[in-house]
Length: 223
Image 1: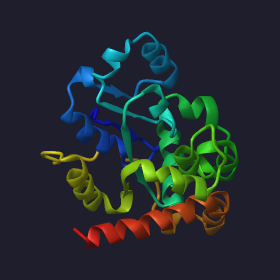
Image 2: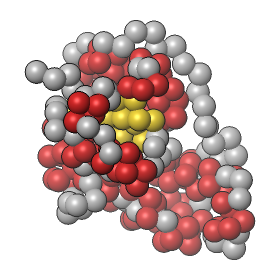
Image 3: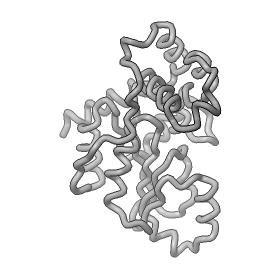
Image 4: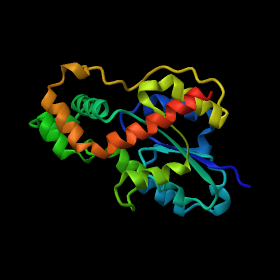
């Protein structure tokens, strides 16, 4: 049987940049597609012979579920999920500090307006796990999760690494945190009306997060 292509579905602001730096250490440059935009990847893949595709062992990026359809051989996904309220707060303050992005898109936008404006701020994690071609539902996300070797929890990052190391037989997983949003407030410093609005916009993400976290804790206890 062909070796499985390992696909890291990088959900924004879940600790994925740090995790990706660990992940790509285990592959040579020609074995991994690292955060190549989907359109460019589609173009490159369409020009590859099937034999050359077999040299690709890993993919990482902000891709939705379904990227495996580029391949005819086996695959396995992994990802990280974060508490939806924490994630949206981190995402907002990250984009505010991102060079050029704030001035172009968010200069006159309040946090409340941002939640309505950015699709990633409304059940963004469930959307990514469901895939672009599928209905948006927790049940569909759970179905797709059957194709995941592991899905970690940002709030339990070190424990997540232990599960990933065991699953994928990784070597040294020492790391340094990168791409951390330093300018964001703590959760207890965010107005309660903002928190409630995030919760309302992320009911599916909250339900899915609770389901994944419950399963995750069971896996950790079984180590």
